[in-house]
Image (tube, rainbow, N blue to C red):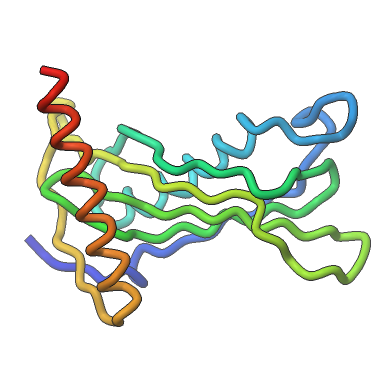
Length: 158
């Protein structure tokens, strides 16, 4: 099985928010943004694994700022941790007001865990992750800790 770097599958997707994605006050629905984040995570996991993937878990979803109709939303996603068939992707949502030269702000962040599936829909092994920098290594270790904590909680429920 090949190994791949984090930069190999790093992706970003941008959208302009429209009225049909918001409430009457012009605030974009959180579910709309979560769907965009899930799509960005899917792209990263699919590119890394080169097979079908599904969302297994979303952790630490934090809304930092509201998003309004007309703003540009960019979802940046990159792998943090890779297990045997699971991949943890960190997604950051940046927002920019296109009516002025304001700085970009971080509106949301979350960790998405995606599972790679074979043609029969069973979990399948994915390429190992090559970490190249100290930041990537630190993020990988934090991802491993989250992975192990989830495994322990799952065992307790059984």
